[in-house]
Length: 222
Image (cartoon, rainbow, N blue to C red; front, side):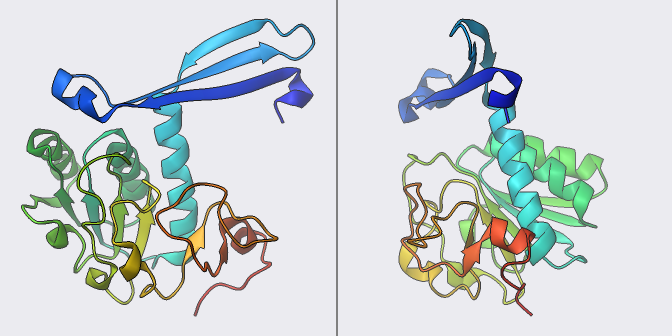
């Protein structure tokens, strides 16, 4: 723990959807580290990379428990920092052979597709969101939480065996369709209420938390 090292940390971030039209990032996180004893600031750290890698690592951990080891196709919804981070970690974790990507930004989607091809995958930039969901072993939605529209993905498009990671708290998905998923897990649940402390686009119920799966308090689905 940071406090055991004499350090306290706080993460600050702002989400400004209109920044995209200004040529600026719409998500801007910072980390501030302070000395516990004196309260003095030790460091201010740009938090974009840390946020992306941490989120992708959580998704990869969940995938390691819930996705099929032979998963060969990845569908990405979004083409920003989170999409890049998830692609990098998952291509090293699974024998991926194909990538489909849907994004409102065709240029950045094309960049990820080219990177996938450089690593030997076939890649397609999709014109419809469903094309990046249906028929895939793993699906990652990573669009800005406050982007428009929301709820444009239907969980009914997922294959019966598919694993989906919703890095934008599920806001890209139609909440009503999420109940069709067989096994719903959150990376953070209140053990008393069974609810997430974050404002998700889904109120539950969840089968369990990721932590409970990791420590074996809840068996994995068969």
